[in-house]
Length: 461
Image (cartoon, rainbow, N blue to C red; front, side, top):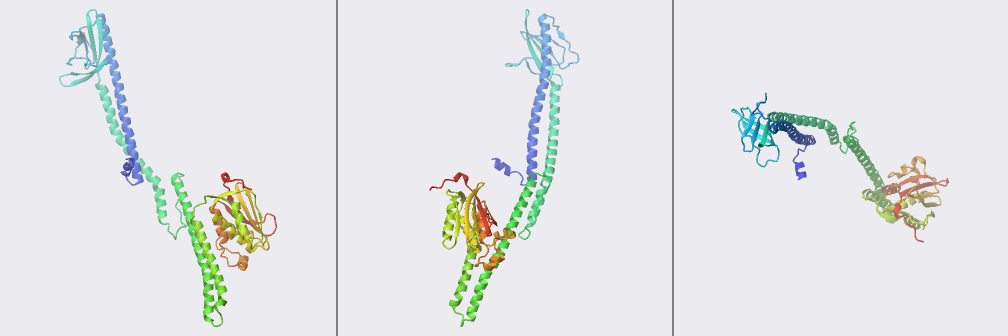
């Protein structure tokens, strides 16, 4: 029901806020006005009742002493009446008034003060009457004394009318102020909306204006600009990746075409068997490039790691397979180091680093695993020429190959270390290139992954 009621409100935030403010303030003022007028009227009637009781008690004292006159004189009080009635209902003493009608206590009334209406020739008079019973030697008497309530009623009516006239004015003022304040508050939103409408694929460098109000709209604008920055960076990376991939794919395809053209044009001198090794090499290169591109796309789209994995097992398995063709020195602890990850991805990341070390090492590759500050550290170092400090970050960019690598590489596309960084980043870790820890010539690539501390268990012997 509440949801349906909300849907009945205007779609505009400004109009909706104004309606809610007007309804809320109007309801609050209405309830307050009813309570105020009721309280005021009761207080005024209490004052009238007090005066009527005081007069009745005074007259009752005179009756008890036998000193009550036959006629009471109340100068200036034309609408007030005093009557003394005996036990037979006969008025034995009263004021000299032109008001007609007997004062009698309503049957069943449980209060000594009640409403009574007397009549004058031209209109009726509404009074409050107090009744006091007096017991004397001459019998029982009831003293009635009235007090006009017209002044109290008129005052209550005047206040009610003033509130009825003032509440609409106040509600209108609140509505106007709310409308104006909401309009001013939403001006930055309109500016943001207008700017967002101008942002297209070709204009991702645009940013929305950030108001200096320091409120939620400022927070929204800052958050939106941060999002646009990420989208812009992602689009630029995607475009750069597409251009680089196109270039890298064109190279083996062009080589294949050139070799096939030569084989066709010189078919008498070049046999298929002679051209096959070069063709197969280019096909292998093309196959590796496509596999790497698919790996990058898969890593970008997959969710974060959730499976507990012993990184020691992964490193040992990769190194064991590599040691059949490469000399690798390993240093690993005898206990498990548990991380949350995807086993195949972690194995691929380590394998890519080993491939890079194998291409640049002269004789030996070292792999060491240890823990530090809640992270497992995998150090993979080689005894090659090392990496220039200026290139230690650039080697992790996609399609990056250093000049030395281009001269000695076996056809890699420069995606191996980029894939490694992407995998390690998805595992909330880092991968960096630096110099060897022992100070000897060569390069060190260090992989750091957070340990799942609550899953660490002692490796069984």
